[in-house]
Image (tube, rainbow, N blue to C red; front, side):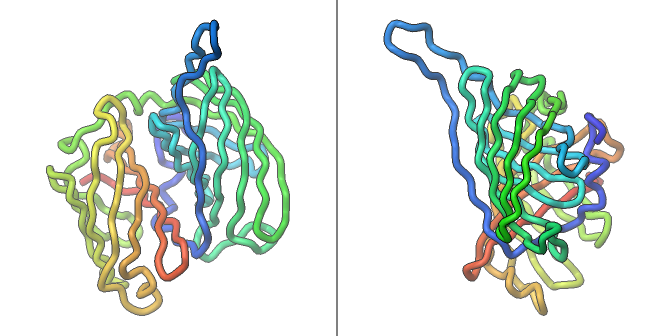
Length: 263
């Protein structure tokens, strides 16, 4: 996967899955009595690389608190929270397949753990364990490289404007106040929500929205509250936005990934 763009994710227009997502973890500074406090590496970044199991590319958004959404190029999304201790990094996460697809054993969801080392704003090397809901266990490794687009900062002025989802042609608008809205012509779904700044120094945004007016098979999305992360890649032409969120409704959990072109 290219280190500087989301181009390998362009085929992921919308990903929905009826499987559970969970997260845990945290980060900070630790010390023991009489010792020098340990400075923990900051996990935040836009991270790109690949995993050894599938050989596929991965793009991830991680905020300064360690909350992350990683998207594999086949549409599998991994959601969790990373914790650091010095240059060590650990995480628990859930993985969910693209709607209409499954892992080789037929399941669409699983849980995993990650353990390795992090060089702040540089690289992550870690081993992973993943267990699908059908009971298949796999172990592998990931190597990720920090993408300096994370250092571009964030602002409502930068994120505002109109975006086009290339497959459906739907236009998503973001106002200078951060209000998010669009309508899907095929399903009738109307999305409304907000994009907000997490830390103006870094290119990661908090996203929240809900659906209404959905018809047909999409009606299950009505009232679902989605939340997650977004980032902008201004090294692409046109500029791209990557949005990765999860939500729950009617006892079911959903995963949604959007790769959008900034008009």
